Length: 69
Image (cartoon, rainbow, N blue to C red; front, side):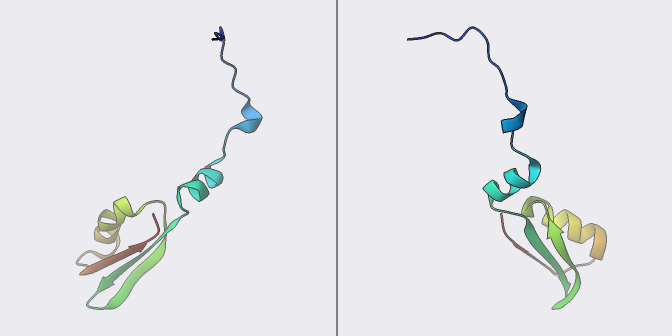
């Protein structure tokens, strides 16, 4: 087995943020609602923060719908 003494990273081959998002499944879409009416909707990086975002923007939201990854 051949041993590598030094690791070199080629900066031209590093993935960019938009390429990483596409690989992960793309950007998510979040819709915050109060009593079935949309109070805010937009693209979001991750659905993991959907409840936090709806709470900050809409206050007393009743439903958060997040599609994507």
